[in-house]
Length: 271
Image (cartoon, rainbow, N blue to C red):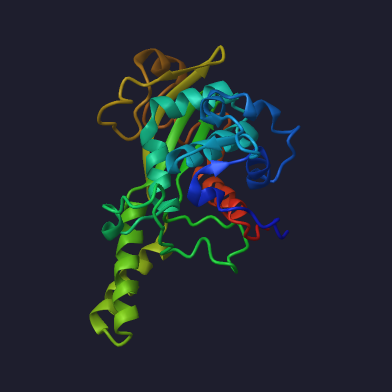
C-alpha cells in the first residue's frame, strides 16, 4: 500500500502522534498502550505556536521504539519488559541503528545539523524497494525462547562493516566507473550478502512476573551460547543446546522492523 506522504519526521526526529501511527501502519486506538510507555512519555514535547504535540526521538530512540513495538506485537512481550530489555542492553539498539541510519565516516564530524544525511548502501530506502524482505547476512534478531529467555542473534561478519565497504566502493565508482580496484572491492563486499547467515548468540536475560532479568554480562564482554545464570541452567538444560533445543520460540527480525518503520515514516511504499 502507498503511504500518505509524511513530513520529514525521521530526519528531523520530531514526530506527531499521526506520524507514529502512520509509521507503524496501525490506528491510534490500537497503539494506545504504546503511547503510554516510558520512552514515549519521556520524549513528549508540549504543543506550541499552533503546532501539535510532538515526540522528540533521536536515531537510537526511533529504532528502539520500532524494536519495542515489534517485540510487543510479534513476540507477545509486554511493553514494560521490552523497554527493560533494551535499556539493559543498549548495544542492541546501537547495532541496528548504525545500519538503518548508516553514516559514512566522513559524516561522523558533521555537527551542522542535529540529524546528518544518511547513506543507503543496501538500497533499503529507495522508492522501488517496496517489499519487506529479510536480508539474512545483515539482519539481527531477538528470539523469545520457551516464553522466558531472550536471545540476541547478530551477524558475525558485522553489518556496519559490510555497509561501509559497499559505500566506499560506490563513492569511488561515482568518480570513476572504470576503477577496476573499486569494482573488485564492491563485488567482494556485496558477496557477503550472498553468504549463509552466521550469527553470534548473546543471551540477554529472562522474563518473569512482568520483569526483565538481565544477564550479569549485560555491561561487559558476552560469550556466545551462554545461559543467563546458573539457576536458569538447571531449569533449561544444557547451555550448549538451549538455542536449538527448546519447546517454543518466537523470532523477531528487529532490523526489518526498524527498516519498515523508517520506510513508512519517509512516506515510502511498504507491502
